[in-house]
Image (cartoon, rainbow, N blue to C red; front, side):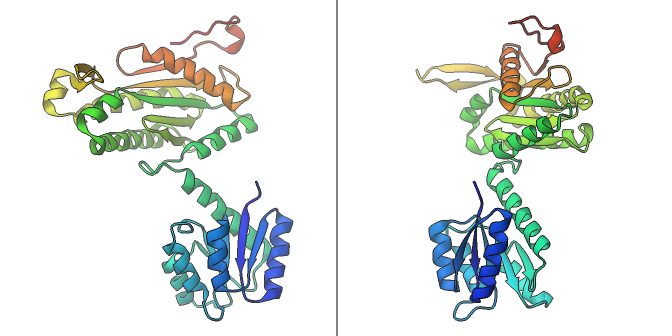
Length: 320
C-alpha cells in the first residue's frame, strides 16, 4: 500500500507543490489548509506521516503538534515540521514538543524525500518492535530474512525457543516472567555482539520465541555461546530452593500439582549454504521441523541440518 502523508500548510501554492512532489514519488496525499483542519484530518485519516508547517494563523504548528501528541489516535504518527526559520532555538522547540524531524524552507526535493522515507522506516520499525524487549518484531524479522534471500548471500537462521517458560511464569507471576524474557533478550544481544559479526540481526517473534540471523560461519559458535550463558545465568532467576531441587511445582487445570524442570533452550539452526532456501515459508518450515525434534531432547540443545540438500533422499531429513 502507498503511504499516506498529510500536508498541513496555509499557503495553497506550497500545498500543491508538496502534493505534486509527493505523489510523483509514490505517496498518497491529504491536504489541510490550517492547523485545526490538520488536527481533524489527522484523527480521521490516521496518515502514515504529517508534514506540518510551523507558521500558520490561529493555530501554529507547535500547537497542532501538541494536540496530535495528546490524542491517543495520533500520538505515534510521525511528524516532520517545515519552517522558514533557521534559528536553532526554533528547531529545538519543535523537537521538544515531539517532532521527529525538521526541514527548512525552501527545501531541496531529494533531501525532503529521503528524510520522509527515513522517518517512515523508523516508524514502521517502532510499530513492529517488541514493547517488552525493544527488539525488532515480526515485520522487521520477515523483511530482514526476505532481503537476505533476495540478495542470494548465504546466511544462517537461529530460531530460539525457551522451554518451560510458561511453568516459570505461572509459578512466579508475570513480573518475574517479564524479567526472564528480558534476561534472555540481553543474553542474545550480547552474544550476537561478541560472536555474531557486524551483520547479525536479533529479533523477538513474541513471548518466549526469538530469531537471530547471522553469517553461516558464526552460527555454531554463536549458538554455543547462547546456550552456555543461558544455562549459567537463567537458573539464577529461580528461588534458591527451586534451583537446588532443579524443578518447580505448578497447579494444573485439574488443581493437581505438576512438577516442571528449570527452563532450557531449544535452538533450531538452518544454514542456507547447506540447505538452499528460496522462500521465507520454506525456511520457516525447516526451522520448525528442527525445533520440534529438539523439543524431545532434555536440556538446552542446538539442532541443525548436518547434510546438504543434494545428500538428503526424498522424504528424509537428518538433524543433529
